[in-house]
Image (tube, rainbow, N blue to C red; front, side, top):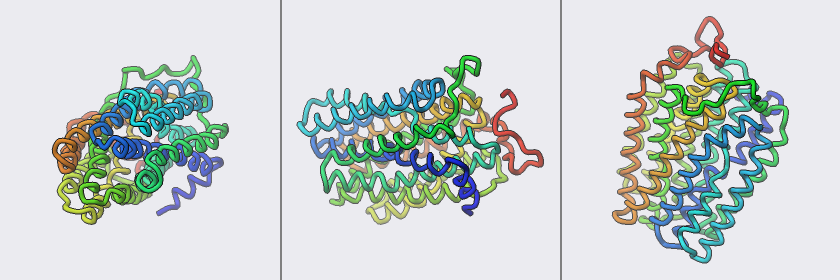
Length: 413
């Protein structure tokens, strides 16, 4: 099962950049939940926590495409350090404001700065695409990245909850920011695997000329993000309503464990079904699983159902990455992947904002209901965009199942 992954990680420089990328992306799994917990503890308000988290995610979403273009044009090393500096400035302002219970608008300013982290999830994926030559290798690499992302979402929320409730309200933000700095310090000096910057003679930015398949998976991602945003804050509130707030991170971690294992299993298989049909199938499973999650009576059943519901998350994201890899030019991959992240980010921001208000007025169940309803939208978006998904090069059959090996990029390259 793991032979493909061992072969990938044995390639020169691969294991090193994968580890560094994983460490730097810990901020992605810890920042939002750490911010919510810190603000809720200090201000005793889920509504304030939801608003601040939502603003941060909206800004993160809006910065993702422009910063991805910058990375494409000047290279990862030149682009990422200034953004890491902005993130640290924002975190320092957020912590100092929250600890003194300062005005909420200052938290908005802080989270704007802190959200300029650049396209962290795309840095290692771009390196894989630069190194690898076949669809099967890229399918396995993107599945590995998706599964590794889930290891962060196993450890990150649990660690954030423990740090915020047992050590200090701001401890999660400190740890995640430190991981970002250390990860970048290891990743960015690795020149051998870094994709070259786009030169003036190479392809132009996508701009708003986004291929229909990329729009399709971005719409699916927006619905998925709406579910994530509502689900994270609602899980904290649900655990809090049961007097088990410290276990909220563990419940989120169990769901991510399911996604981690699902991602590894998905990536290790050589699929004969069309890519578009797999996206639709896992989207329907997301809708079923998270709708069922919303009605669980306690954390034990919540976590048990969450394990199975989460098992299709990484496969959906890996398949979406693969759609983008097949739909854009190689030197536009960072930007193409950024559109997927902007879809998730807009959804997460809206979900956190709406769920925070619903929880404050009605209770945790309302937030979970919003998450369940958003999961249904994932399936609706997938079914509605089938014509666009079917237009992906190689979508009717993976290259590994063809008698003729198809290159991992369109012929227009």
